[in-house]
Image 1: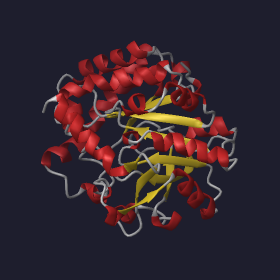
Image 2: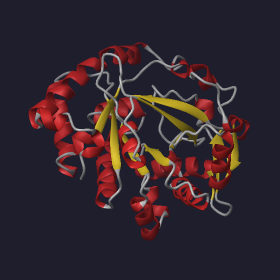
Image 3: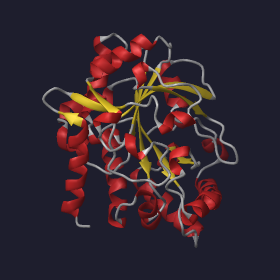
Length: 330
């Protein structure tokens, strides 16, 4: 697959979920979907939102402090092991991760599973939900297909005088340059300086092979993730990272992890301390995609997390490793 065809495919995904003239975004209807069967509470916001509980403690894994610590720090509230967030999902994605917990029907930009909403209308739904939740998570799909969504949500929160009350969190697959292509420098600077905002970019593997295995994208795109992440760091974004460690090849995993962490530190010496490896679970929508290879990847991901922990222990003191993720600043 050449670069032109890849870009065309990504552009088509963007066209499905964003109307530039009306600043409308296609948001997934979660109510009644396969995804709702995995949720601990029913959908809300007229079926277009869901409440997610971000849990710090992950069984047989390392702690996941995102977005708990950045949100609590920004909002100046007590740190918590369980953080409630109001989630909205953009109805398209340019990446086809086999482990994704979102059903394919909610990521294909189809109107029968979604609705066109402006950011202002979305914030109105949040206000009417009356949950007192103070975190809004822009998810998907891939929110970076329409970076205007994050920008418009910030402005809608300001218009509603919620910019100090609400912490905004946004996901990014690190597979597009749309933020830099479609937003002006002034808009990017506005986003970077928005106080109650955190962004997380997900590295879809620890090497080019695992990236392709997880994302179903060509290996050559792997390096682009780091370049995009570095641009956000250079612009002053409060950006964190996820990494998925599933693969069908864990040979020489210690050496592979060493190279991965080396590459992260080329962006910034403390960046690995702002990265959280995600444990992959088997959700209901994942079942139809699972094969024996993917099942083994789920079982064997523990080998990679052990290599990750060992690599970080070589590079940082116990004191540094004990810092809250939000206190490791660029």
